[in-house]
Image (cartoon, rainbow, N blue to C red; front, side, top):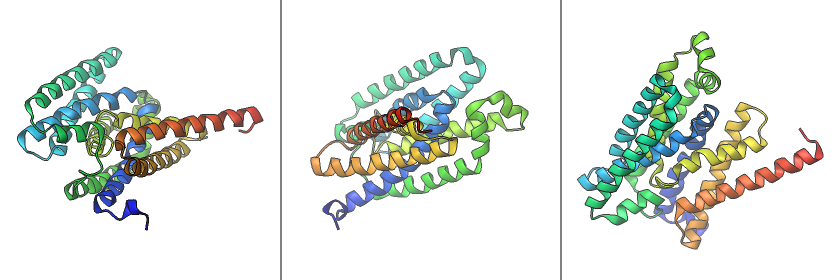
Length: 271
């Protein structure tokens, strides 16, 4: 067995990382098709305020991160319903509020190491509690996505047509925002709050270079994320690098490779 897999902390990191690699691009496909990719970026920064609050109060940071990010996501959805023409402005306001709160709470905490691990990700600090929280919630998220797959599919392209088709638009929008918030909060330990939005979007961008259908986009997105996470964790271990940054840089590399493949296909006239 390779050395990287012999350590308990790396085994935990790979298990958590692969669960994140399954759910992050899965929600990313629907987000990008809805034209809401910036929501992931906004919520990931708001979640950092929850992390800082948890560290400051001695609560497991993922719990307040989930709570605060869910509240922020529901606020975004409410604003998007009421003033859709200014939805981007609402994201900027909530992002600024979240970062301002996170900055204040971080300045009040003496645990800079703990906070940094949630900003940029950490291999050594993935705990058994992380496993107990991440794995069950990730399974629930996957189950919800597949249970409401066709509803989310309709919403990704046209909410008006979805309403006419009898899709419970408001319920699914709220559920989806909650799923996004929980996914981002669960991802903080491995990828980091400053980078998780990239893991949601870049594998999807990679898949769009190669896929010919919506389902293929989902499959290729997950494969790209799994490849990025696993190769990133291995590289981070052997090269002593920050796991979040390593994962994201490799995901960008795979996107560039996919873009080259697409270019060569088009040059040869391959459909």
